[in-house]
Amino acid sequence: MIYLILSVLASSLIFIIFKLFSKYNIDTLQAIIVNYIVASISGIIAYSEPIDIVYISKQGWFYGTMILGVIFITIFNLMAITTQRNGLSVAAVATKMSIAIPVVFGIVMYKESTGIIKIIGIIIAFIAVYMTSMKTAEGISIKRGNLIFPLLVFIGSGIIDTSIKFLETHYVGKNDVPVFSATIFGFAAIVGVLTIVYKAITGTLKISFKNIIAGIGLGVPNYFSIYFLIKALRYESMDSSTVFTINNVAILLVSTFAGILFFKERLILKNWIGIVLAIISIILVAFSI
Image (cartoon, rainbow, N blue to C red; front, side):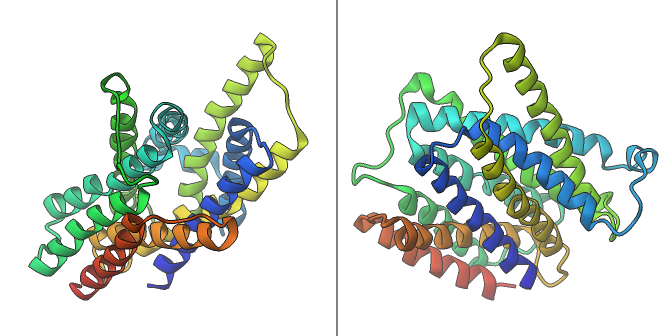
């Protein structure tokens, strides 16, 4: 349980840092690329064994991390497009609702428990995510032409969580979690660096020192959010559908309260109802173990 709590705290810290980006006019793309580099280095430092490229390349999870790294940075860009075209609420709902994919995967693939209390808790969790993410009383409105972007965010985010669960279950050794995480971030960083190189060639690159500092600040909690999530998924008394549900809803709760406390955000009635439902869903899912 402690790993799940730490994953929630690390992921919520990422939210706080992202909120500071807009306040200090941080170039998000540059900061994200630096963040992936720092997150990868963090995993390498945490790895207890000497780094052996040949050994890593021969692991069953290696090509999976390559694909995940590309998906990581692709989904980030899709989230940015979704936010610009559909609003932050749509991006938040698409990301959080994606827990449906790993939850269904865990139930179908690994025959995880599906008691009535747990099912009710998961359903309430989806409602809570929607209501807590609303910023206006009218709810979400998406133009048909822009629907593809939140849909891709939904699918991509779900694939990330599902793939992490699959790879850590079947291929990642007990001591390989740090280097596994580092490799995912490493491939994401490679894609990001190639993007920076392209921008430099085309003359559209303007590197700022504050973007680098922001990326460093984001990289460490980003690494630990994945590291602790993998550790939580290995907790024998809690199946993956339970972990993903509690993790996502708890992140939403902590992030919401952080927004109120640090950024003076105001909530509408729907948000407060969503918070209550989120707490109820966590209790129901947790007690269904």
